[in-house]
Structures are given as structure tokens and as C-alpha cells.
Length: 173
Ligand code: NI
Image 1 (cartoon, protein in one colour):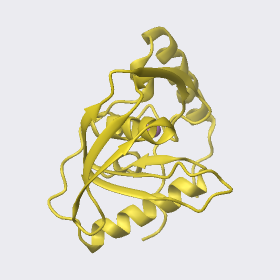
Image 2: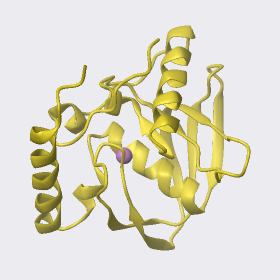
Image 3: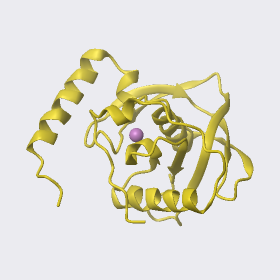
Image 4: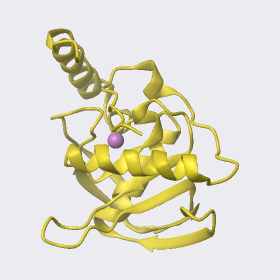
């Protein structure tokens, strides 16, 4: 498939709940590979299927450092099954809200259960950037953006700026 285009907010497609995937097959694997291509091309660390206009519960994440080997995670129907009591506040961005950042508080560690690319159930315990990124991407599957975690005042400023930028952007060829 051609590399999917990442949708920029505000867009009603980013506000919908994504549907579970019945089975991970070749089509889903291809979609995940396309999502990873789009994510790496945009220098992102995570991407959710609704961000490319597919309302399915699929996320891809790679929080490895540029000098490290890539470590792509492909997660279908991801579900957080445990969170630490400790929370941490850190700056977040999103490929659907380019060039905007805000501090968001989230649990520091999580355990996530998902189907991998072979349709096998897996669990991963994560902390740090990986934990934050997985939580951010799962939010997308609920139609939640990181700006939904901050004050409506700050959120509206960001969304208004994005609307203005979109109006000025040339129509993609
Ligand atoms: Ni995002």
C-alpha cells in the first residue's frame, strides 16, 4: 500500500471510537507497515490507525533512540491491564497536532495486552517514554487527543492555530 497520509486536527475522524479487529491478517499487517513508514517519515514515535483514517484498534510505536536499532511495536486491540500508582507529568506532542506541545500527567508504568502481527496475545510492561507513548496512542482509539487532557483554554488556542495553518496549507498534490 502507499504510505498513508496523517490527518491533522481538528478533524471529526480523530474524535471517533475505533472498532476492534477480529483477526490480524495480511491486510492488517500491511496497514501496520504503512503506518510505521508514515510514522518514521514524520519523525514520530507512535501512530494510531484513526490518524490515517482507519477506525480500527491498531497502534504502532517505536521509542528507540535515533542511534539505536529500530524497535517497532505493532499492537492490535491494545488494552491497558495495569497502571502504576505513580504518575508523571511530561511534555507531549502528536503527529496530528504538528508543532504543538503540552504537559500531560499519566501513570508512569503500565502493562498492555494486545494481539501481535501473528494474531498472538501478548503482554508488555513498560515505563518511561514507551509507557507514555502507548497510553497516548490508545487514547486515539477512544477519539481522545492529548489536548483533551489540558485546560479548554489551552486546547482552544492550539486548535485555533491548527485551523489557521490548515487554511493556509496548499492542497496536497
Ligand atoms: Ni498522537
